[in-house]
Length: 105
Image 1 (cartoon, one colour):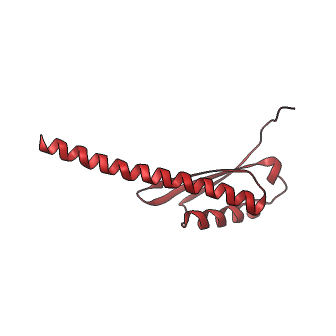
Image 2 (tube, rainbow, N blue to C red; image 1 turned 180 degrees about the vertical axis):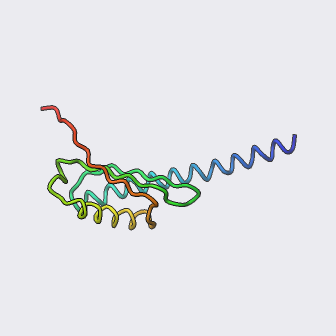
Image 3 (spheres, helix red, strand yellow; image 1 turned 90 degrees about the vertical axis):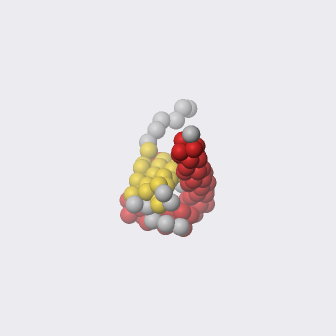
């Protein structure tokens, strides 16, 4: 019975670390969206994924109506700078999405 209890405790502790990573990633994502809005005036949705303490991927979605006139290089630099500052790391992959949607009048 003791090995099963040990395994359970190990999984529980590992799960706690996972939850902390998710919570930290969510908080940083919210801060990054706020910084993008304050610095550039663009509404952004930001999501970051951590794995074992390493920033694996960050996705930033911007509204095409707000950034449509910007060059991709300008958007990339702005988003990369904010992500590096807020997450204090460079992700392995940065996904920059430009979303176009319909608004009801």
